[in-house]
Amino acid sequence: MHKISDIVGQNDALKSLRGAISSANTAHAYLFVGPHGVGKKTTAMAWARALLCLNQGKGETTDACGVCTTCQKINKNNYPDLHIVAPETGKNQTLKQIGVDTTRDLINKLSFKPYVSSRTVAIIKEAEKMTAGAANAFLKTLEEPPGDSVVMLVSENYNALLPTIISRCQTIRFRPAPYETIVQYLTNNHGMEQKQARARAAISRGSLGTAIRETGDELLGLRNQIISMIEKPDKLASIKIHTIAKAMDKSKDKTETDRFLSVFQELLRDLLIIKTTGMYDNLINMDITDQIGEIAERHSERKLLNGFTLAGDLIETRRTWNINPLLVVSLLLQEFNV
Ligand SMILES: [Zn+2]
View 1 (spheres, rainbow, N blue to C red):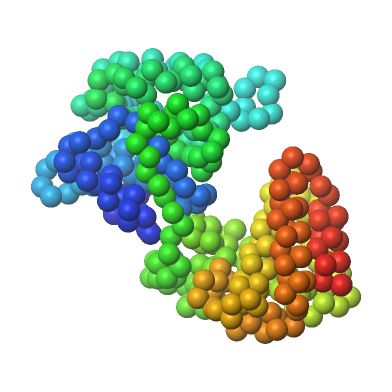
View 2 (view 1 turned 90 degrees about the vertical axis):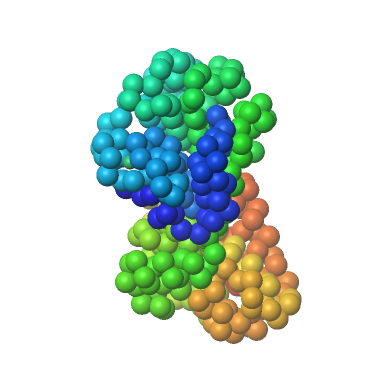
Protein backbone atom coordinates (compact mmCIF):
# COMPACT_ATOMS: atom_id res chain seq x y z
CA MET A 1 0.00 0.00 0.00
CA HIS A 2 1.26 3.44 -0.91
CA LYS A 3 2.18 6.19 1.48
CA ILE A 4 2.10 9.89 0.61
CA SER A 5 5.88 9.77 0.21
CA ASP A 6 5.44 7.15 -2.56
CA ILE A 7 3.32 9.44 -4.79
CA VAL A 8 5.28 10.64 -7.82
CA GLY A 9 5.11 13.93 -9.71
CA GLN A 10 2.38 15.67 -7.67
CA ASN A 11 4.42 17.99 -5.48
CA ASP A 12 1.89 20.87 -5.39
CA ALA A 13 -1.01 18.66 -4.38
CA LEU A 14 1.05 16.88 -1.73
CA LYS A 15 2.36 20.15 -0.32
CA SER A 16 -1.20 21.32 0.47
CA LEU A 17 -2.14 17.99 2.02
CA ARG A 18 1.02 17.70 4.11
CA GLY A 19 0.58 21.30 5.25
CA ALA A 20 -2.96 20.52 6.40
CA ILE A 21 -1.75 17.60 8.52
CA SER A 22 1.27 19.32 10.04
CA SER A 23 -0.73 22.41 11.03
CA ALA A 24 -3.65 20.21 12.17
CA ASN A 25 -5.77 22.41 9.96
CA THR A 26 -7.68 19.90 7.90
CA ALA A 27 -10.71 21.00 5.90
CA HIS A 28 -13.85 18.84 6.03
CA ALA A 29 -14.31 18.37 2.30
CA TYR A 30 -11.73 18.01 -0.44
CA LEU A 31 -12.07 17.62 -4.16
CA PHE A 32 -9.20 15.83 -5.90
CA VAL A 33 -9.38 16.69 -9.60
CA GLY A 34 -7.07 15.98 -12.51
CA PRO A 35 -6.58 13.74 -15.54
CA HIS A 36 -6.83 9.95 -15.50
CA GLY A 37 -4.03 7.92 -13.97
CA VAL A 38 -2.03 10.69 -12.28
CA GLY A 39 -2.49 9.37 -8.73
CA LYS A 40 -5.68 10.95 -7.37
CA LYS A 41 -7.16 7.76 -5.91
CA THR A 42 -3.79 6.51 -4.68
CA THR A 43 -3.24 9.84 -2.94
CA ALA A 44 -6.74 9.79 -1.44
CA MET A 45 -6.04 6.37 0.10
CA ALA A 46 -2.56 7.39 1.26
CA TRP A 47 -3.90 10.55 2.81
CA ALA A 48 -6.79 8.75 4.48
CA ARG A 49 -4.21 6.46 6.05
CA ALA A 50 -2.13 9.44 7.17
CA LEU A 51 -5.22 11.09 8.73
CA LEU A 52 -6.23 7.96 10.61
CA CYS A 53 -2.83 6.51 11.56
CA LEU A 54 -2.42 6.04 15.31
CA ASN A 55 1.06 7.53 15.15
CA GLN A 56 -0.07 10.69 13.42
CA GLY A 57 1.40 13.81 14.97
CA LYS A 58 4.20 11.87 16.64
CA GLY A 59 7.59 13.12 15.52
CA GLU A 60 8.12 15.08 12.33
CA THR A 61 6.22 12.85 9.97
CA THR A 62 3.10 13.86 8.06
CA ASP A 63 2.68 10.37 6.62
CA ALA A 64 1.13 7.13 7.82
CA CYS A 65 3.48 4.90 9.81
CA GLY A 66 2.42 1.78 7.90
CA VAL A 67 2.80 -0.50 10.93
CA CYS A 68 0.23 0.48 13.57
CA THR A 69 -2.96 -1.59 13.86
CA THR A 70 -4.95 1.12 12.07
CA CYS A 71 -2.56 1.20 9.10
CA GLN A 72 -2.62 -2.60 8.93
CA LYS A 73 -6.41 -2.79 9.07
CA ILE A 74 -6.79 -0.16 6.34
CA ASN A 75 -4.41 -2.17 4.17
CA LYS A 76 -6.72 -5.14 4.60
CA ASN A 77 -9.80 -3.03 3.73
CA ASN A 78 -11.04 -3.74 7.19
CA TYR A 79 -11.30 -0.47 9.06
CA PRO A 80 -14.59 0.84 10.48
CA ASP A 81 -13.79 4.56 10.27
CA LEU A 82 -12.95 4.66 6.56
CA HIS A 83 -15.77 4.49 4.02
CA ILE A 84 -15.21 4.20 0.28
CA VAL A 85 -17.97 4.81 -2.25
CA ALA A 86 -17.74 4.16 -6.00
CA PRO A 87 -20.31 4.20 -8.83
CA GLU A 88 -22.21 0.96 -9.41
CA THR A 89 -24.85 -0.35 -11.75
CA GLY A 90 -28.26 -0.29 -10.08
CA LYS A 91 -31.38 -2.26 -10.93
CA ASN A 92 -32.48 -1.89 -14.58
CA GLN A 93 -29.51 0.32 -15.31
CA THR A 94 -26.53 0.04 -17.59
CA LEU A 95 -24.79 3.25 -16.55
CA LYS A 96 -22.72 3.18 -13.39
CA GLN A 97 -23.68 5.89 -10.97
CA ILE A 98 -23.76 6.89 -7.32
CA GLY A 99 -27.41 7.00 -6.38
CA VAL A 100 -29.37 8.59 -3.56
CA ASP A 101 -29.50 5.36 -1.52
CA THR A 102 -25.72 4.97 -1.51
CA THR A 103 -25.31 8.61 -0.55
CA ARG A 104 -27.86 8.41 2.28
CA ASP A 105 -26.10 5.32 3.57
CA LEU A 106 -22.80 7.23 3.63
CA ILE A 107 -24.38 10.25 5.33
CA ASN A 108 -25.71 7.89 7.97
CA LYS A 109 -22.30 6.29 8.52
CA LEU A 110 -20.65 9.69 8.84
CA SER A 111 -23.14 10.72 11.49
CA PHE A 112 -21.92 8.04 13.92
CA LYS A 113 -19.02 8.68 16.24
CA PRO A 114 -15.84 7.09 14.95
CA TYR A 115 -15.25 3.60 16.41
CA VAL A 116 -11.48 3.57 16.75
CA SER A 117 -9.98 6.75 15.35
CA SER A 118 -10.60 10.33 16.37
CA ARG A 119 -12.30 10.99 13.03
CA THR A 120 -14.18 9.35 10.19
CA VAL A 121 -12.89 9.54 6.62
CA ALA A 122 -14.84 8.96 3.41
CA ILE A 123 -13.61 8.71 -0.19
CA ILE A 124 -16.07 9.14 -3.07
CA LYS A 125 -14.55 7.86 -6.30
CA GLU A 126 -15.71 9.26 -9.67
CA ALA A 127 -17.76 11.82 -7.77
CA GLU A 128 -19.10 13.29 -11.04
CA LYS A 129 -21.23 10.14 -11.31
CA MET A 130 -23.39 11.16 -8.38
CA THR A 131 -26.92 11.63 -9.62
CA ALA A 132 -28.39 15.11 -9.13
CA GLY A 133 -30.50 13.68 -6.30
CA ALA A 134 -27.47 12.11 -4.63
CA ALA A 135 -25.42 15.29 -4.95
CA ASN A 136 -28.20 17.42 -3.50
CA ALA A 137 -28.70 14.99 -0.64
CA PHE A 138 -25.00 15.31 0.14
CA LEU A 139 -24.76 19.12 0.12
CA LYS A 140 -25.68 19.57 3.77
CA THR A 141 -23.11 16.96 4.89
CA LEU A 142 -20.43 18.74 2.88
CA GLU A 143 -21.33 22.04 4.45
CA GLU A 144 -21.65 20.89 8.04
CA PRO A 145 -19.88 17.56 8.29
CA PRO A 146 -20.57 15.67 11.48
CA GLY A 147 -17.79 15.58 14.08
CA ASP A 148 -14.28 15.69 12.79
CA SER A 149 -15.00 13.82 9.57
CA VAL A 150 -13.10 14.37 6.32
CA VAL A 151 -14.67 13.67 2.93
CA MET A 152 -12.59 13.37 -0.25
CA LEU A 153 -14.32 13.53 -3.60
CA VAL A 154 -12.22 12.25 -6.51
CA SER A 155 -12.98 13.17 -10.11
CA GLU A 156 -11.34 13.48 -13.51
CA ASN A 157 -14.23 15.46 -14.88
CA TYR A 158 -14.39 18.82 -13.12
CA ASN A 159 -16.97 20.22 -15.54
CA ALA A 160 -19.45 17.46 -14.79
CA LEU A 161 -19.60 18.31 -11.08
CA LEU A 162 -22.35 20.49 -9.67
CA PRO A 163 -21.03 23.98 -8.82
CA THR A 164 -22.74 23.67 -5.43
CA ILE A 165 -20.56 20.62 -4.70
CA ILE A 166 -17.35 22.28 -5.94
CA SER A 167 -17.91 25.42 -3.88
CA ARG A 168 -18.18 23.39 -0.66
CA CYS A 169 -14.86 21.59 -1.16
CA GLN A 170 -11.24 22.60 -1.05
CA THR A 171 -9.99 21.76 -4.52
CA ILE A 172 -6.65 19.95 -4.85
CA ARG A 173 -5.44 19.86 -8.44
CA PHE A 174 -3.48 16.95 -9.83
CA ARG A 175 -1.53 17.53 -13.04
CA PRO A 176 0.22 15.28 -15.53
CA ALA A 177 3.56 14.28 -14.01
CA PRO A 178 6.65 15.80 -15.69
CA TYR A 179 8.17 13.68 -18.48
CA GLU A 180 11.62 13.36 -16.87
CA THR A 181 10.07 12.39 -13.51
CA ILE A 182 8.29 9.46 -15.15
CA VAL A 183 11.42 8.39 -17.06
CA GLN A 184 13.38 8.41 -13.82
CA TYR A 185 10.70 6.46 -11.97
CA LEU A 186 10.54 3.78 -14.67
CA THR A 187 14.31 3.29 -14.79
CA ASN A 188 14.80 3.38 -11.00
CA ASN A 189 11.74 1.49 -9.80
CA HIS A 190 10.87 -0.78 -12.72
CA GLY A 191 14.36 -1.46 -14.03
CA MET A 192 13.45 -0.28 -17.54
CA GLU A 193 16.09 0.56 -20.12
CA GLN A 194 16.35 4.29 -20.95
CA LYS A 195 14.93 3.85 -24.45
CA GLN A 196 11.85 1.95 -23.29
CA ALA A 197 11.34 4.27 -20.31
CA ARG A 198 11.43 7.35 -22.57
CA ALA A 199 8.93 5.82 -24.98
CA ARG A 200 6.56 4.77 -22.20
CA ALA A 201 6.84 8.17 -20.50
CA ALA A 202 6.04 9.91 -23.78
CA ILE A 203 2.97 7.86 -24.57
CA SER A 204 1.65 8.07 -21.00
CA ARG A 205 0.92 11.81 -21.25
CA GLY A 206 1.98 12.38 -17.67
CA SER A 207 0.02 9.46 -16.25
CA LEU A 208 2.31 7.30 -14.18
CA GLY A 209 -0.53 4.75 -14.02
CA THR A 210 -0.50 4.33 -17.81
CA ALA A 211 3.30 4.36 -17.95
CA ILE A 212 3.67 1.40 -15.58
CA ARG A 213 0.78 -0.70 -16.88
CA GLU A 214 0.56 -2.78 -20.03
CA THR A 215 -1.66 -0.14 -21.57
CA GLY A 216 1.57 1.78 -22.05
CA ASP A 217 2.94 -0.92 -24.38
CA GLU A 218 -0.35 -1.24 -26.26
CA LEU A 219 -0.43 2.50 -26.88
CA LEU A 220 3.18 2.42 -28.07
CA GLY A 221 2.37 -0.38 -30.52
CA LEU A 222 -0.54 1.64 -31.82
CA ARG A 223 1.59 4.75 -32.18
CA ASN A 224 4.28 2.91 -34.10
CA GLN A 225 1.73 1.53 -36.53
CA ILE A 226 0.24 4.96 -37.14
CA ILE A 227 3.75 6.34 -37.69
CA SER A 228 4.56 3.66 -40.25
CA MET A 229 1.38 4.62 -42.06
CA ILE A 230 2.03 8.35 -42.29
CA GLU A 231 5.75 7.88 -42.72
CA LYS A 232 5.34 5.95 -45.96
CA PRO A 233 1.73 5.98 -47.04
CA ASP A 234 1.35 2.90 -49.22
CA LYS A 235 -1.01 -0.01 -49.72
CA LEU A 236 0.77 -2.22 -47.18
CA ALA A 237 0.44 0.40 -44.44
CA SER A 238 -3.19 0.79 -45.35
CA ILE A 239 -3.82 -2.95 -44.99
CA LYS A 240 -2.12 -3.00 -41.59
CA ILE A 241 -4.18 -0.10 -40.34
CA HIS A 242 -7.38 -1.67 -41.61
CA THR A 243 -6.52 -4.83 -39.69
CA ILE A 244 -6.26 -2.74 -36.52
CA ALA A 245 -9.59 -1.08 -37.28
CA LYS A 246 -11.26 -4.48 -37.77
CA ALA A 247 -9.92 -5.62 -34.41
CA MET A 248 -11.22 -2.40 -32.81
CA ASP A 249 -14.58 -2.98 -34.44
CA LYS A 250 -14.83 -6.49 -32.96
CA SER A 251 -13.56 -5.46 -29.54
CA LYS A 252 -16.16 -4.89 -26.86
CA ASP A 253 -13.96 -2.18 -25.41
CA LYS A 254 -15.06 0.88 -27.33
CA THR A 255 -12.34 2.99 -25.76
CA GLU A 256 -9.82 1.40 -28.14
CA THR A 257 -11.05 3.52 -31.02
CA ASP A 258 -10.84 6.62 -28.85
CA ARG A 259 -7.29 5.69 -27.89
CA PHE A 260 -6.40 5.29 -31.57
CA LEU A 261 -7.84 8.71 -32.32
CA SER A 262 -6.09 10.46 -29.46
CA VAL A 263 -2.72 8.87 -30.28
CA PHE A 264 -3.26 9.92 -33.90
CA GLN A 265 -4.18 13.45 -32.92
CA GLU A 266 -1.20 13.80 -30.59
CA LEU A 267 1.17 12.71 -33.33
CA LEU A 268 -0.30 15.27 -35.70
CA ARG A 269 -0.07 17.92 -33.01
CA ASP A 270 3.66 17.24 -32.67
CA LEU A 271 4.12 17.21 -36.46
CA LEU A 272 2.32 20.55 -36.75
CA ILE A 273 4.42 22.13 -34.00
CA ILE A 274 7.62 21.13 -35.77
CA LYS A 275 6.27 22.15 -39.18
CA THR A 276 5.10 25.59 -38.09
CA THR A 277 7.64 26.56 -35.42
CA GLY A 278 10.64 24.31 -36.02
CA MET A 279 10.72 23.82 -32.23
CA TYR A 280 11.23 20.47 -30.57
CA ASP A 281 10.77 21.43 -26.89
CA ASN A 282 7.12 20.86 -26.20
CA LEU A 283 6.40 17.64 -27.99
CA ILE A 284 4.35 14.80 -26.52
CA ASN A 285 6.32 12.12 -28.36
CA MET A 286 9.61 13.22 -26.83
CA ASP A 287 11.36 9.92 -27.46
CA ILE A 288 11.18 10.06 -31.26
CA THR A 289 11.70 13.73 -32.08
CA ASP A 290 14.14 13.00 -34.97
CA GLN A 291 11.71 10.63 -36.63
CA ILE A 292 8.84 13.09 -36.24
CA GLY A 293 11.00 15.85 -37.72
CA GLU A 294 11.61 13.73 -40.83
CA ILE A 295 7.91 12.95 -41.25
CA ALA A 296 7.03 16.64 -40.84
CA GLU A 297 9.27 17.46 -43.78
CA ARG A 298 7.39 15.04 -46.00
CA HIS A 299 3.89 16.41 -45.46
CA SER A 300 2.41 19.83 -46.14
CA GLU A 301 1.19 21.99 -43.26
CA ARG A 302 -2.26 21.94 -44.78
CA LYS A 303 -2.42 18.15 -44.85
CA LEU A 304 -1.25 17.89 -41.24
CA LEU A 305 -3.73 20.52 -40.11
CA ASN A 306 -6.58 18.78 -41.93
CA GLY A 307 -5.66 15.46 -40.31
CA PHE A 308 -5.42 17.08 -36.87
CA THR A 309 -8.79 18.81 -37.24
CA LEU A 310 -10.45 15.65 -38.57
CA ALA A 311 -9.14 13.59 -35.62
CA GLY A 312 -10.52 16.24 -33.24
CA ASP A 313 -13.90 16.25 -35.00
CA LEU A 314 -14.08 12.47 -34.85
CA ILE A 315 -13.23 12.46 -31.14
CA GLU A 316 -15.96 15.03 -30.54
CA THR A 317 -18.54 13.18 -32.66
CA ARG A 318 -17.82 9.89 -30.93
CA ARG A 319 -18.92 11.41 -27.63
CA THR A 320 -22.50 11.27 -28.87
CA TRP A 321 -22.48 8.93 -31.89
CA ASN A 322 -20.93 5.51 -32.06
CA ILE A 323 -19.14 5.85 -35.40
CA ASN A 324 -17.80 2.61 -36.80
CA PRO A 325 -14.02 2.31 -36.27
CA LEU A 326 -13.52 1.26 -39.91
CA LEU A 327 -15.10 4.51 -41.03
CA VAL A 328 -12.96 6.49 -38.60
CA VAL A 329 -9.78 4.90 -39.94
CA SER A 330 -10.82 5.21 -43.61
CA LEU A 331 -11.51 8.92 -43.21
CA LEU A 332 -8.11 9.49 -41.63
CA LEU A 333 -6.31 7.39 -44.24
CA GLN A 334 -7.94 9.35 -47.05
CA GLU A 335 -6.42 12.47 -45.57
CA PHE A 336 -2.99 10.97 -46.18
CA ASN A 337 -3.88 9.59 -49.62
CA VAL A 338 -3.38 6.00 -48.65
ZN1 LIG B 1 -0.03 3.96 11.35
